[in-house]
Figure 1 (tube, one colour):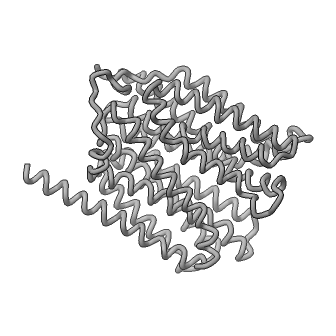
Figure 2 (tube, one colour):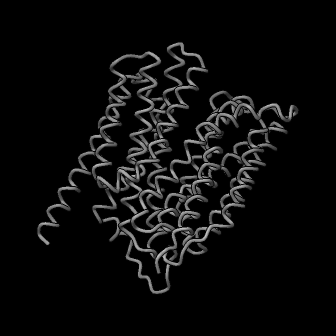
Figure 3 (tube, rainbow, N blue to C red):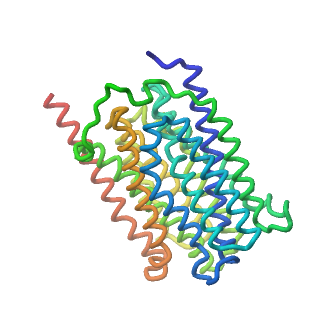
Length: 399
């Protein structure tokens, strides 16, 4: 039965809004949790442990989150993530700041990682609720929620501070809980069509059979490498800029433009995929990422960082949205939970590794060499996409 257009659009609008509300929480953690951690931790070296706990929690819970939603449905799964992770994490983090407990603050950030493990599936839910012709655009529209979050995230981390003077830096975490509550209210209206949920008669292939598919491997490789390269360079950027004497205000501006570069293209990425094909968009993403890396050779001024980080975000967008769109075509509804869960498990494992290696690589290699080193994994993705394109073209000729 075809999806009614008004329902389709309403569902996507709900997912876009919930994506925005979640990304405000994510950007707040990336901006503020290290600062709070530095104040609460017993040793300076543990300052970023709360952020690492969020990423670790995402890695551990992303596959269980997918399998849970396979059993109970998207709506109940998303509400569970926002309730336990969003509201619970925000309140626990606020309480930890109030009583100055570093372990409890880490626990709050860990819960926020649980929220992230569910929220990462908003883009796949958009594919579930959209008709085939609208699917890639629905995914990209959900990703475009980050444009609004690029402004609201820094605002939440800074302007809400001071509302409760007795708990410095605590207000943004209360706001995270409030926004998660708002997301739950929106999710109550989400209606995933029957075609977007597993059916009793669906037959699931073994995971080994699915992972052997060339499309699965290229989809995961493109999204995972693109995300890991982006996070690694993004995490190193503030350290590199501060080492060269840039003020924190200048660093903040560069990072805000980077987030805009990540999500603003989502307004057109789906349309580009529909017009030119996912393979060409993936190749364009590798070219943009390579250009970003090469910018490190041209200078170290503010404009160089600005262009490099904007391109870094755009390249990530093409690879992540393109990889997500490619993945939706390799599984049926019965296989959806485990395939999408394995996909995001691989992605966030590489992302966590990239974030952990970033500081050491910058220290040992320097900014220029670190960026040049990124060309190798980018070239690997380009080669894989080109191979898949030729492989499918030859298969089409033979058939």
